[in-house]
Image (tube, rainbow, N blue to C red; front, side, top):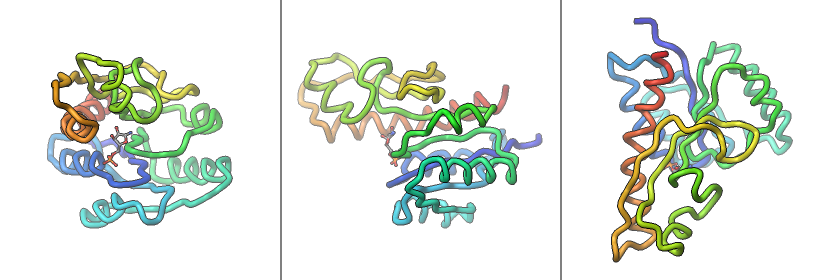
Length: 187
Ligand code: GRF
């Protein structure tokens, strides 16, 4: 099997990155995680990538357009077929979305289209939702509106706090993100 190159963008902790790495090093995974890019030099996830000997790059560029031009160069250089955002706290502009004709995907900790943006668990609890969850979706020009690839529901319990709910949803994120990547790269 010829594995397709893909990369992950992070800004922080990198627990989704870790789950993606662990799945991607398996023999039957269709992708080769060739590069991890962070816009923050102190992102903890960088350490995880380095531990697995994955090439890491930090691009701390204030000007978004310069950041994205650098990314597009790397995408070409490493023949990247898919960009996976995993806790990447920077909005991508139409420039990169239009110029990367392959695919950009993201994981979001809510059942989109509900609770786009930040503080999703807090908002789900406050609105007395029965379910929370997570969604892997395509990235388009409007935040958290691209079409859904995979979604997983989690029941909200009576005594749930933001922390307990976040923990349960995150566990599901770690399962569906590698699955979604596998699905896309297999097509
Ligand atoms: C996750 O909850 C993800 O859904 C959101 O940001 C968080 C990143 O966590 N987009 P981690 O860095 O993968 O641990």
